[in-house]
Structures are given as structure tokens and as C-alpha cells.
Length: 124
Figure 1 (cartoon, rainbow, N blue to C red):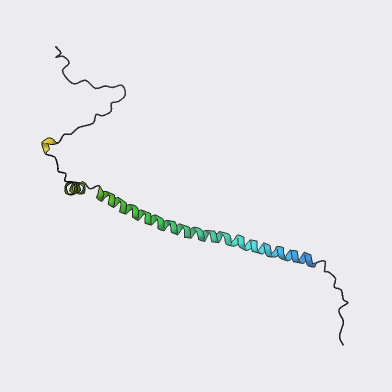
Figure 2: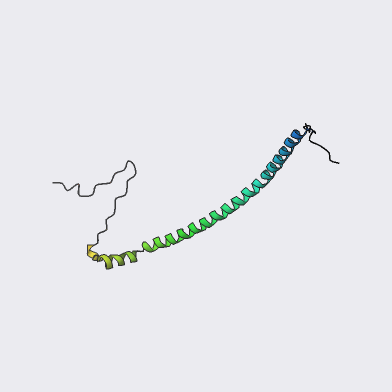
């Protein structure tokens, strides 16, 4: 015997909507809790990776700085400069009698002046 259910009308469950909203709020609460738990750990990991990258960059820059200081010292070597001047430009050292040393005057303290040199008393 077959039952004919075509005339059956289902009643709407008044608690179904409330249960569905409660279920979605529970899932949202769990997902938010999981996110709040995982976020600091992910930030720590990201910070650690960034710290390692910056340390590698710092070591690279220190090495580059060391090389540049060595290169600067080599370029400032007076013997090297004299050799280049002699070989490429053809400059020569002046003779000892052609060398003059000129000293720049020092700045005097405020309110002081130099005594004049020369013969003041031998005016005619």
C-alpha cells in the first residue's frame, strides 16, 4: 500500500532560524578566536624573517664598507699618486731650492692684533 503525501503541508519550525543564526555566530566566534590566536604567531614569524634579512643586509653593507675603505686608502696612497703623476702626466719633483713653504696666518682671538714688523724707528 502506498501513502499519498502530496496533501501534507509542512509547518515551519519557529526555532530553525534561531538555531541557524546561533550556529553561524558560533562558527564566526571560533574563526575569530582562531585568527586572534594565530595572528601573533604569524607576526612573530614574519618579524623573525625580517630580522634575519636585515642582519644579512647589514653584514653585506659592512663588508662593502670595509672594501670601500680599503679602496679609499689605496687611492689616497701618496706613492701611488706620485707614480701616476710621473708616468702618465710627466710631472717631476721640484728641486729643493724651488720649494717654498707658506704658512697661513692663524686667526687671532677677539680683540687682539699683530705687532707690525719692520723698522718703525728708522723713518727719515
